Image 1 (tube, rainbow, N blue to C red):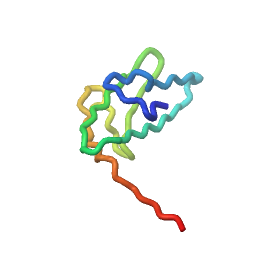
Image 2: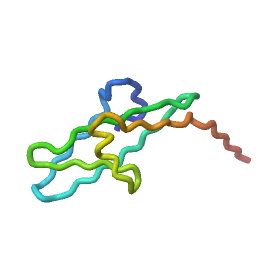
Image 3: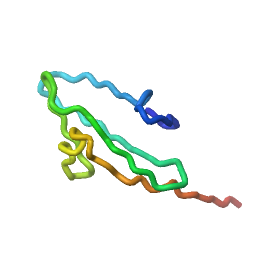
Image 4: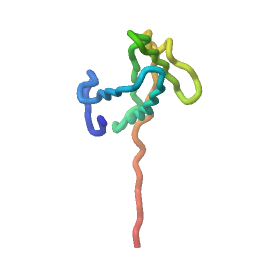
Length: 87
C-alpha cells in the first residue's frame, strides 16, 4: 500500500480495518525515503474514538502521545545506492 506514491497529503495511502469488539488489530507501517537527501517526516493519527483505542509504537517505545499530538517526527535517511554483480 502506498509504495511509489509521492504526496504530502497521504492520499492513496490509507488502510481501513474491521475488527470484532474486544479484539486487537496490529498494523505495521514502513516508511522509506527514495530521495537523495535526509528528509523529516511527521506522523499524525487519531486517538481513542467511539468504541476503540489506538496506540502507536516505534519498536517497543510507546509514541502514542507524540503521534496523536502531531509532534512525532523522524529524520528519514536518504536512499542508499546499491550495486550488484553477476557472473
